[in-house]
Image (cartoon, rainbow, N blue to C red):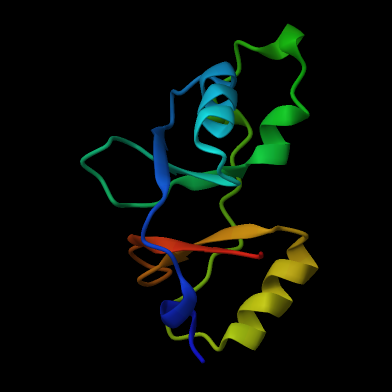
Length: 116
């Protein structure tokens, strides 16, 4: 089975300049594990991503931070990867959600994979 067969095309996007406090509110409101970060909403180019636990560890004293300052660029998955390989990447990276991109060169976001 391949990644494209199990990925979700429903995901939340935020811009690079989104405040951590805003991201935290989105995580709470939509009960999601991952936010995909793009330069602007018209763009499907992945700049990075943050996980729910990434924003929960930021203290309120540092609430003026943007997602740009805490984003993860890697790892990402490719749609034709075997799901066992994807699981290994996620396990080694200690992530429970991860973006899927069309290619490493374009980083065009296609969807996300989450561990249930």
